[in-house]
Length: 592
Image 1 (tube, rainbow, N blue to C red):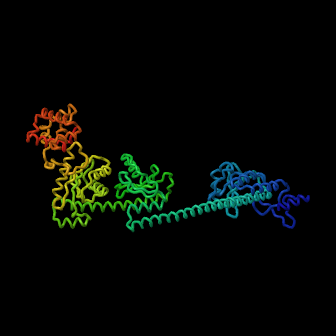
Image 2: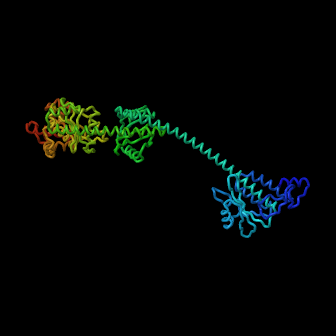
């Protein structure tokens, strides 16, 4: 009808208000705002402005802006005033913040009770209030609440209805556009999430494959009976990094791969203990000074450290997984070896205890053969005592390990304050002592070695000889080191239970004045006397051994007679002096 009204206006055909269009019956105007389409008034401004408003509404994509523009132009189509605007957000009617001041609570309640229908609204201080629903294809978009200062005409009602429908259509377009953007954004997010999940799935497949390879490699090592070297070799092949194993004290046990230091640096006990505490406290693998280290700790006991040498910090999560899994396998292997060593040590101890107490030879031979020890060979009893070590199973294992390292085939037991070995063949003079000094980190140890033993029934006596040699060395001025019973000489007739104060008194009685003279004058009269007896009283040999002239020797012997008051030509004095010099030399450490 608006179009026909506009055409008539262009053709110069005025249309009287209330006259019906051509070909239609005349209808009485009604007070209703939204009935059948009325005959529009003659002014041309409202329709033209409505066209401009429609373009502005459809060019806007924000629903709040659309509602605000509609409310701003309500007055352009008639005697109307926009009082409030509502938008439907998540199924609820919400006053539009861009639509003006908040409506009164009575208006708000009335609009919500209309449930999508048009209806009258009582606006305080206004007349002819009405809530107009903004419907679209998708349902209700909101409400426009308007009031009228006078009764509108049919044309004004029609223009208002057109504005409402244009607003509802613009809101439908905006809602569709927003939903399209939301769908596009959601689709984009879904695609990104799918790509992320695909990448994660690929990573999980790769990680699972690597973990399976690690499990299979180490399981194959375990099933084949491979030990420490096999585990570290498998870890080196899996990661490509050099692999090392250190013991509890930081000494190198094994190295697999290139770049092994030669010689391997000696550990700093304090720093190594601090490192162990740091790794144990953090758990898992820890990077310290170019190494990725993991503690080997079955059942809480630290047995050593497994590490990857990685100075450039190139190890990834796969290398960490392989290291920690290998540390678990190595902990099981070393724990198993520890258990076997403890069982073997206990069985050895039982046999050695029986041998030292005295047992039948047939049983001794049979039991020793089961351990791979040949009692038919010459045996030596070795007694070890270390001041810084408690004589427990751990120290017994340390002694056994050191003996094996120096090639000493032996069986081990322990007593309350020392460890006893029954060894095949004569031990080296210093090898065991030096190995134990390295193992314990301290040199404060004493070792006594018996004379040779040809048959098992002689081992109890040889044990007493080893104790005697240990006691002599322990009470001497040079108390740390190894002493053989064969080297005791005269002191072999002195038992370990004798009173050393009496021995010292005996030496003091016969040599005390000479010792005091040597101390005051920095002389060597006691040493000269001892060398004189060692050379059988031969002047020439004694002078030559002391690198002095024979006349100097005669002068010293004369001074010895004068100072000591003993006559060297007297048989009794000569014997006592010789025994005193021998005890002074062996037990009391000689000069000094």
